[in-house]
Image 1 (tube, rainbow, N blue to C red):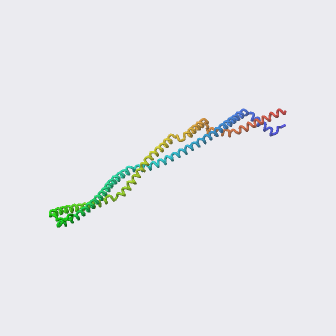
Image 2: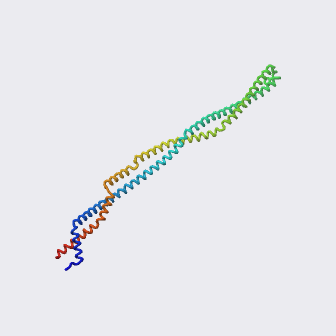
Image 3: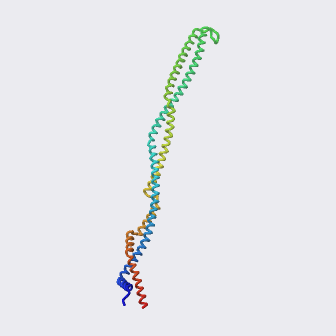
Length: 301
């Protein structure tokens, strides 16, 4: 009796599988090893990604801190440059201020001279008033010298009239001299008044310059503080001490990456091998099933 086609085909397949059993089992074992390796590498990949993300976050934090410090340094540098521009004009302001102070002192002396001239003018006027009063008295005495003395009523001597005239003449000369002195003082006063006309303006300039110089002194002190702050930031940026803990953590994570020794190309090759060897698993399962069926048939017989 001829065998049924399905049974014949199964027996033929079983015979083929049995003939290649060692090869199938060896290939299946290779597939299992590759799967285990893939699982191991996948765990490494997950850890690799976690560590890489940790490094990325820390580097972003370091970069943010560094950017903030650089921005702070730039702001300090800008302020310092402004202060330097002000300080650069200090010598000019100081020179102008010293000139104005000398000019102010000179005008103050002239102002004092004006007061002296004014006082001398008052004195000259007082002297002239005294001389005028004395001359009026002498005029009366001279008039009386031609007759009797107004004090005692006795007849005056001719010599007395001559003496009075000499005194009166001397007093007139002195009065005229004082009058001329007043004119001289008046001319001098007018001239000095013209000279000290800018006095108030120079006073204002001196006051403004003193305030400006004080501001520049403060700017100079502030520039020292700004430079110290900028230098400290520069040192922190160069030494990267601003993120010491973060950088240490990055080093530790990078060490972990090296220890993981994950190779993406190797992992890709393993996965490709697993995909390419899936047929081996099918053949292995079929072999196991057919052997199971054959064993059951023998036991039934």
